[in-house]
Image 1: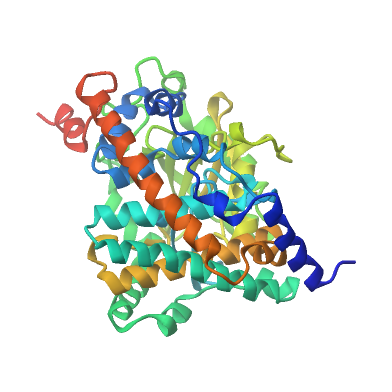
Image 2: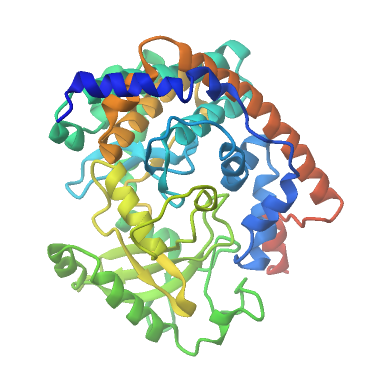
Length: 468
């Protein structure tokens, strides 16, 4: 059996195959982004693809967030040290945040796993560092702050990986970052943001959400309120599904939902199956979410217990990971919802109480989780320079924990990174180059939308269509 020192040395030896300086390379980016963007829209609700493009048009940062496929294509032509382990697959700075554990503790970690898949850990780190530089420019931070946040991501990732490398397997597995931990390390300017996030998380529960998105019908039954283009009923007059959509041909959504729910229930632990059995379905509606996910099928189900206390579950479509076509690795399962759930459970120290998966009408795969429950994201627009740097450190540390837990190879990765700034220098150079590449791609995307090659619409456009 190899010793800890042996594994550090093995990581260091991997530099011969892939020097750390090689990570500055952008890969083969002399491609047209438009066909790749169009490819990423295939299989979505076509009427909502225009909304996806409308959200991507807001800025180079929303464009970056909205199309992970483009960078996956580019990363596939870059070097890596050869370690394949579970990664996030879409690791930008807005895919981190706070969420509740089953014990109602508030943790901070990676919190989006739609694209999770075994792959090179460097891809997550490169996408994260580049996202900080893209966001820093978008938010008008200075060049010095932009460089600082990129380097802070790398420094804290490096330090946290070394810490994990020296821990036992159990300590790494149980390791987590809670908000009291964030408070203890926050600068004075960031402390107010952390406290506000904690207070906000405590208010974000099912009972608080109920009056915001539901009404009672003429018979007094709870129903989800249509709010275009964000929420609409599948068969209602305000549906945004395409006229020839196969779901519109379903005679009774309850029949299909009951089948989905039975399959989903079987993916839960026994005690959670018992808890879930105490809730009954009231309504189901389509919910448009995010930027990159717009047009994929996402449903929100309203369940209540015998006291009419609510439980909102999100059934989110799980498509093939955007990084899958660029990797020569096989999954243990062909069910994409199971892929998402297993990746999340591996990378997070604790996950949603109701996390599971199921198959929907037409054979589409879904994963299931609670909607909104204590989930919070960074409010980047109100971060000053110091708070932005604190957030960069939190993300770097969280990613290191996730990679260490999921791979079990922290000593190998840490040995490769070493204690110098060699990898940080290369990744900052990469981020600078890729931020420029993203801006060039965004300009081509804007031109495609202006000339009608791609159709983009805003929320206001959709709302106006359905309100005289």
